Image (cartoon, rainbow, N blue to C red; front, side, top):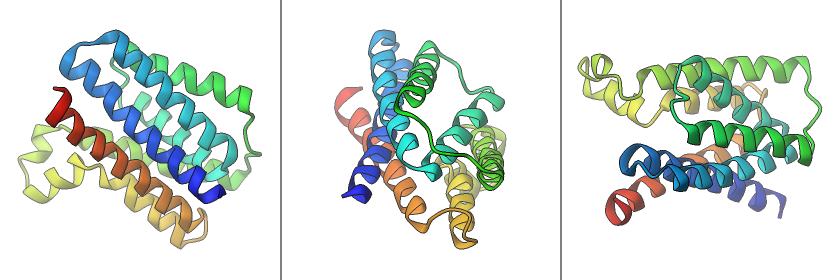
Length: 179
């Protein structure tokens, strides 16, 4: 049951993250983007409170987005604040030196993804790079390598794929039905 709940939390986090971004970026619907971001923050905080790996991954994504200067709207601030508040309320796992290393490595992957995503100069170099960065594969590769090295559980890679699949489902739904 734990695996199902964690996978669902990752998935709902990705789903609401994409909807929040699209509401803000495509429809300029600030209130909807904020509300969806808060829901995203809640699912992310819950996953992070029950799994050290999730905490490492999501903290790395948060820091990576800040460092890549991709926190570009009030909806991102609302998501971040709701995540941090709820993460404190729900409680967080015990971090170790290894988990801090995992956060730094995942953060580097997140920054690379954010710098490459929607970067026309990189997209112009090749169709492969456009695909790689459009779907943010750097962090997926990093998480897989960390799992194969034993620094993350292999299930964490699968959960992260749930996040990514739900993110893409939200993209499709938004483009087809909500735009």
